[in-house]
Image 1: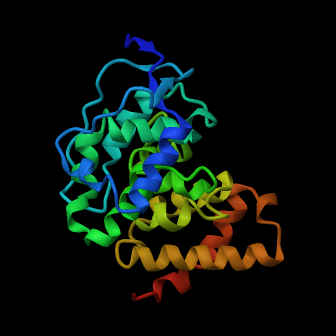
Image 2 (image 1 turned 60 degrees about the horizontal axis):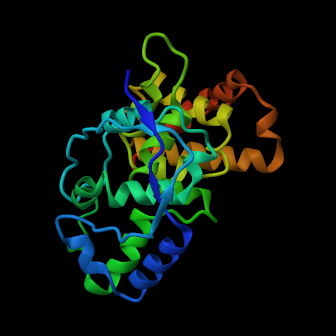
Length: 251
């Protein structure tokens, strides 16, 4: 059994200072080096129990936009004891991006590819979490992995991560579906993802455009009816009625 213990996390004061420096285009050079040195006094011990065993990620394509479902599953299973409250703590995820996953983050974000005037903001957007915005948990390149699994794992004995893998098949899910109002509703989120998986032939082409159309129709329907009162079968029935329209989507 993997041992678990408390571990350091950034202090809120340290995060404020780091973000201010980056927004002022200072401190960017630290993210281009081989290791990020965290000053003494910038951390405190977390109250959450986390694994002491190293989590080995496969490398993402350099500068790539897609995450690995397998990396996400590894992270979630290692940190499965986190509560949603713990997993919303900016200090926890920011510490991980600057320590355990610093090498992965460098390969995932590819800071060098950004123009010098944009590097500071880019780092803030991807290495930190704006706790005032739930959607920012999808921007941080480590917290996103955990949250996607948390929001999509099912009780299926065959494959509890089938919907997780579907989400990681297309960037649009994490930029539009999951952070959106409808996507934050569990019944709607599961119904949409299950519908796509169950109708793979329909979504073999122009999937992004078709999923966006689904979300637009759901948003419109939510404007005049209480979607939250519908069960999964009723939502899927509405989606099945859209099939003729979805077949016409070309781009």
